[in-house]
Image (cartoon, rainbow, N blue to C red; front, side, top):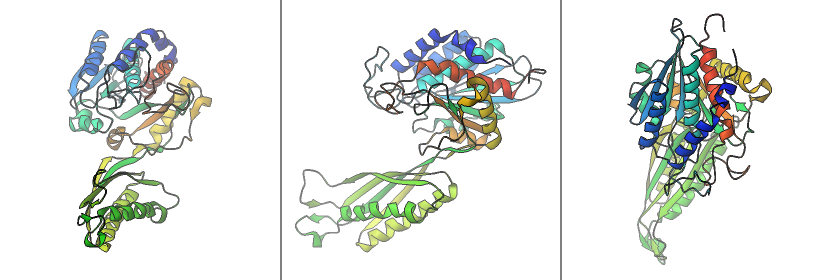
Length: 399
């Protein structure tokens, strides 16, 4: 079985044009109407069966192999949405919209899956069905969950599911994949503190919620330091404090609010942190004569690769980029990813594709205002995705 990369590389100029067009027209979660139209038009031009409006603005395409006698199916997923941030690049394909940018490379992910779709539709060198999932709303909108709730896996079968994300921290030509955790669960925490307002010159007549907030901020860090096992990993970050008014220097406010995030890999650790944080918040507030309420929202679960599929993905990656270029020990990220919802329903693997500096230089990482997807990795990523399908569902005599 040959390497798909070389065939896909022949179409590179066309794919770069698509990627640049998507980059110039970024759309936020569940607003990817133009992006979805471009994807649908390209799939239609290739004669590929596709279905729109799955999970609001998502698209699912179906490519059947020369044979489907095996009854097997593989899902390949790419995210399509952009970020609400200002782009500071100056190249011709920079965002045309203020406050919107493809700062995470989803324009590249979409292009790679389109390239893989073209290759698979032209060759069909597999025995089974490939489900190509163009997902909306990854950046905080849980678009993966929306597609699942819209019957994704009931309507479009997938025995296994795979995804690929560009990673500026890896050199071009490297692919990283491993069994177990790849990305952390992401939870949102909101702590509302109520005290008693008063004059800053007479604090004894008030109950200062800002003072309570300060003690909560400090105590929250004790959870990871003293309640999480040293061989486990967790993050508790309180990132915003809202209280009072900058123009009212002598007014003790009645309320204060803290907002932050918790990141974990294990559900048991997640449960413990929610419990301990609630206990700390209530007890600290009570100690100062105030009251406080914790709102704990579980936004995305952890992205956990199943062992067999991760080892298979690493083997496929080796056939595409060379075994010496497969990274098996890249540390999991405390960032989050809603591909996790799909991995809760189907075995599969999430991999990272090396793309070098990703824009302005080696320090330009994801979500940077000067980030740009590296076009040179389009054939590599597309080839890897296509090879996953071919290797998972080999034609008789070609396995």
